[in-house]
Structure formats: C-alpha cells, structure tokens
Amino acid sequence: MMQKNFLMQKDKYQYSVEIAGSCNLRCPSCPVGNMRDVKEERPTKLIDSNLFYKIIDKISSEAVNKNCFVSVFDWGEPTLHPELPKFITYINQKGLKSRISSNLNHEADFRSIIRSNPTEFQISISGYSSEVYSTTHARGNIFKVKSHMYKLRQHADHFKANTEFHVCYHVYKHNFADEFEEMKKLSKELNFKFIPILAKLMPIEKNLAYIMSKNGKNNKFNDKKNFINDQDKKIIDLLFVDPYEEYKEWKKKSKLKKNNLTSYCTKREYKTPIRVDGSVGLCCAVYNTSLKVVNNFLDLPHDKIHELRKNNDYCGTCMQHGLHDNWKMKQSQLFYKSLLGNNFISKLQRKIFKNFL
Image (cartoon, rainbow, N blue to C red):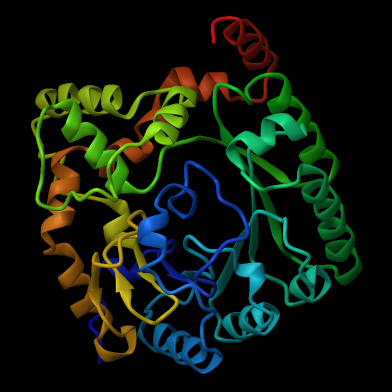
C-alpha cells in the first residue's frame, strides 16, 4: 500500500492524462506549432478507452486526497476524442475533479460534454478580433470560438452544471489593451472567470536552447529540433519579457537568496503528466518523446514514478537555468499584477502602457 506522504496530501495535486495526441491548431508558441519534427515522433492517436479507465482506476486507488484534479489534456485538443463526455463522467464517479482545456475550434458535442459536468472548463484564447487572434492561435477562427462560448453557457444553464468556466487569455504585446478589455467584457457577460496569463514560448526545450545559446553554451540535451528559428524569434518579440532577460533576473534573485532556488519545482512536485500512449513524461512543460521516465504508468506505483522524475538529469539542467521558477516569476511581480487587474487604475495603466509597445 502506498505511503501517505506529503506530496499526495496536497489538495491541488494534478494528473494530466492526454487523451488526444494531436491538435487542430498550430499555435506558434506551442510545440505542436513550433516543433514539427518532434511532433512527427510523438503518438498522434486518441487514447484507448480501456487504457484511460485503467489509468483513472490507478489514480483513484493511489491518491490519498480524492480532491486531486485529472486534466484530460497536455499538448493536444481533448474535444477531438469522441469519448470525452464518458471520460469526464468516469473521473467524477471516482470522486476526482475533472478539468478540460480547449481552443473551442472543433465542432464537438459540447452539449454532452457539459452534461457530464466537468469541474473546470478552460478556454485557451489570445484575442478578440480575427486579425489579432489568428496571429497566436494559428488556424483558429475567433467567431467560432465566441459562438461556442455562448453554447457552453446555454448548456451549463440548461443542465444546471456546476462547471467553472475559465477564459485563459494569453497576453502578448499585440493583444493587450483593447482586445483584452473586449474579451473580459464577453467573459463577464457569460459569467466566465477571466484569467489573464502572460504568454511564454513553449516548451521548456526551446527556452533552454535559447538561454544557453545567448550564454554561448551548448548542452547534451540540445539537438536541431530544439533550436530557435525565425518563427520563434517573432513570438519572443511579442512576449512582455524576453526569456533570456527573465533568466538574468532569476540569476540575480538566486544570488540574493540564502536558500537554494534550484531545489524545488511545483510542476515536479504536484503534477504527473501521462501521455496518450500511457507513458509518463518527465514534465508537463516538455515535449520531446525522449524525455519520459516510464513506458507505462500502470507498471509502477506513484512514489516510484515521482522518484524517477525527481532524479532525472534534464530536470536538474532546467532548474539550474531558473526555468522552473521563471514560469511564475512574471506573474508574481507587483507591476504585472497591477497591469492585469480589474480596477480603474489597471485599465488606465493598460491604455497608457499600450502606447509604449
């Protein structure tokens, strides 16, 4: 029987179970859009239903705290799987919390999905107008997204669903101010929680390659698939903070702190990423197929899997460059909290700041 350790008692522990290995969009800040060579190596199938149920059974039997979340996505689009409503129902029946994240561009059976009553439904979005949205959600249709947002509200009201809807607005320089305000208004109209998130270039492999190239170094994990290309540079220019500048800030912070900033990572401690083929990835923020720790999640207990992830060399390299800490650094700064706020001062700051972009 698994020991009741500190890790599993956390209320917010998450498992991400990737049910679709592909996506209908090609967002340039996401590895599905910017690491096509690696994408060809990854399984793009839909998860086998029997495998999914076995994974959930194992999670349920091992989890000390039944309030942990099961997210049915990683890099793929979960609404592509026709069994999604049944999956959500099964997660709920096991007493676990269920989470969906969707770009809302697929013509899915949203009625059945909402009837299954997911705990959370996240909407990934990066604009209000077609011109702005399509820049960072390539192949996407913002009019279809808005239409589906209204349908979600209608279905939730009809079924009296307890689902929390989160509009995760990825903030770039080009979609700030006016677009930001318009999407926030729509979210309020639909009673969806508007959550602005400062965008990043993903995955971790791209960030590490960029930082080390700026430092004039190379590392054993790099190959041509991770290198920064012209498309990546365009996305970096749209970010509020350059990843290398963020790294330098982290270095200053680490020197001022007496404790070792490379010793703790929330993604490593509180989230287990399970891929569509049942293997366990090193981290939810990496994409390369080689960065996995177990071929089959069902083969080993949670504690053993966690130990393998914690002792992985790549994990250490990532933390030595502050990428585990930088993930949340920008959003913890007072300036950005103020800038993305809901009050009058924040709105005024956005209008002023827009003129400097």
